[in-house]
Image 1 (cartoon, helix red, strand yellow):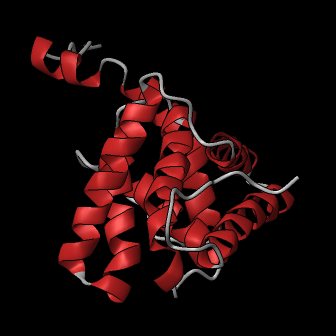
Image 2 (tube, rainbow, N blue to C red):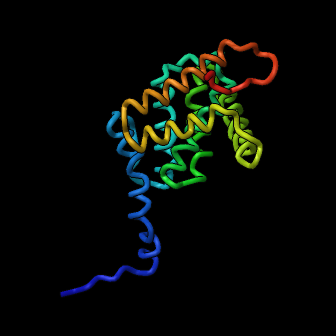
Image 3 (cartoon, one colour):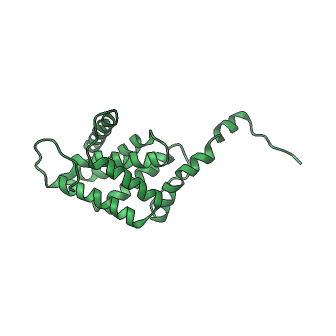
Amino acid sequence: MVVLVPSSKVAARWHGALEARLRQAPLEAFLRSRGQPFATSGETRVTDNIASAAVYFFELARCSRLDGASAVVGPLVCAVSDGLAALVREPNAWRVAALIATARLLAPAIGLGAAADLSASAVRDYSMSLGGVPLELALPQIRAAVAAAVQGNDELQVTSAVGQMTELLFASRHRPAAGRLDLALSP
């Protein structure tokens, strides 16, 4: 009988790998069950899967025409990405995922350059709001609703989260452009 002991380099790479895979399993299962693309390996697996899920939620909300709502898309994608990153316990993964998803969603409507700029601004503003400035009322609700929907992989929770997103996007399209956009959901 031979016992194989991995080298310290291999052991260091594998340390915590099982726990990480188990934390990420709900997100991968959610994407798989809905026929969405997902990554199973690679350095960018977590951010790619979070971005795919964020885009999927927007597609469910039928937000392909985001003309009048582009100002709220970035913060909303940040909230969705932040909720999913918290779910898989990768707290820093939301930033890159939000940049990717926001640019992917807005590029057809406003162009890739403008989408990248708006995406970067949204991530910066959302990051600053996490640092102590209170978030708008709707974003924490949506953040929690999306995380719960993915965790439970439950159609009713998905529908509820998408409904909240749709209401917010609809409200932003029909609000005057001047002044600050209030993101609170109606009671």
